[in-house]
Length: 373
Image 1 (cartoon, one colour):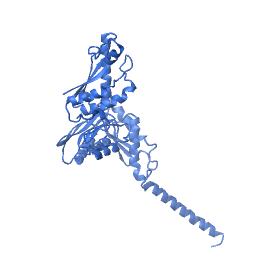
Image 2 (image 1 turned 180 degrees about the vertical axis):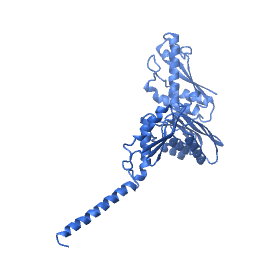
Image 3 (image 1 turned 135 degrees about the horizontal axis):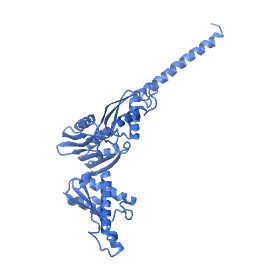
Image 4 (image 1 turned 30 degrees about the vertical axis):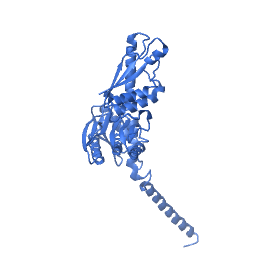
């Protein structure tokens, strides 16, 4: 080898080393345990397809990935929705192809047109010797998976499934959220987990560790879900000291009626003048009332609307009824069983004070709660 040939051979060797290093880097990027690794592509794609389905207003469609093929299942409203869901899934992660990393195919054989249910409500209730699963499930596969999850979580209780399959689930992640809810319900001594549309609700009692684990598990639920906890710790409610001494989890209607009375003792739900629109300043009070209503909706809860006597009686009757319905709708949106809420307007017929003064009329414009067996 001449002196002139030596540098050429050195550069060739360096280039080969560089190419080998680049190939190794690509392989590590594809297969190493990090976010962009090839082995994580199906998981990443499932998240992207689920997000795309939510954005395209197909929240009840479930997603499973087989490599880069998205398999959709569930119930939709019409044939056009099947095509729409397919299009949303196919374009969820950009162009397809094995190296582009997108969805290469969409299997819609698991989608069918059927009944939609709104609100979409599901629950798991702990009883002394059994766990009862009721309400809606988005597919037969999810219903079976939830029953199996309950059997794993509660091996010493009989699992009763009263679920039915309908469309209308709030998210492709419904099954995952419901399975997690079952797991955390297993950490309580008593209670119920509910999912009503996008509202996740826990009602019951548990030890300090079980309640802490529940709070941690649902501190940041996936969109669009939100969480409300109406859970006591060893019988005490640290978030609502005004309700101490009342057994709302297992007590009688008198305990629940007293809870509402305490919360409204120095507070009133306010509305826009002449309207059933709830004033934003009342939201904190409504949240406290929802907390009590959730723990008491095994009973019938009348939401009674009242007005003063100013104006025509028929107008006041309609207004009081509309306001009672507005409060009932708010509570139902927080997960309270809507069938247990009975809104009723009484107009000016049941005044609390004389209507001869402004203070008396203001006291008569109110919402009350009556609890019955």
